Amino acid sequence: MDGSAIDKQIEELTEHAIKAGSRLILLDFDGTLVDFTTDPVTTRPSKELLELLEKLASGPQNQLIIISGRKQDEIDRLVGHLPIDILAEHGAFIRENSHWKTLLNCSTDWKDEVQSVMEKYKEITSGSFIEEKIYSLAWHYRKSQPGTGEANAKAMIRELDKIVSEQHIKILRGKKVVEIIGENINKGVATQYLINRNKYDFILAIGDDITDEDMFRILINNSHAFTVKIGKGDTFARYRLNNNQQVMHLLKRLQIALN
Ligand SMILES: [Mg+2]
Image (cartoon, rainbow, N blue to C red; front, side, top):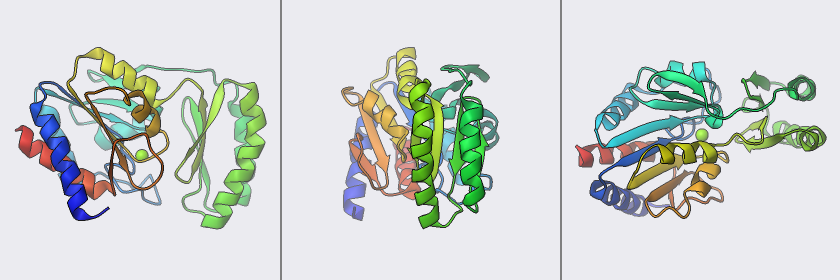
């Protein structure tokens, strides 16, 4: 998308935001606010980004929330000092008024069986690793050779299909990650919970990955909602920006306009 089309979208979103009296801003973290880097451990939000989020969140009519797939302690480490509510593990946990609580849960009986399959693929895929969260297991291969990573991901999914069909779990196929998670846990259900907490006349939801589509889908018939997909690919979102720098432009524009 060229620059003028991007500017037009940013202006349109800003106009809607200005007119609203109560705003909900839902932001995914990785790939949306920060670049999708090869190592999630070394990812750090810039000082500029943190200051911008803090300013936006401080507006009394703005409720800014980060909704991430990361574990609670990890997302806390990155943005925890901000005066905002945070969702972790794709909506399973919420930090509301500074306290973490479970929002959605599931059985974890399936973990050992799934882990043993993932271990096998970890062995044969150099650079890949397993991440254990409370309600999910994720096999990441962003540091592996692309061809090998994709092929082994497909083979692993075929093997996991049987376990998945027998348990209340599902496969999330994100960017360079295969994640197994409780079937009821998704950003859409979490978004519905957030919408129900208050009355908003402007809802902005931004995300880059497949898990964000649940959030976009739940908002599809909401006339106050503006959904933004980052990057290429099919989406339920109404708007699209190319990368996290353009998200920064949008947030900066909003911050200036709403002050
Ligand atoms: Mg993301």
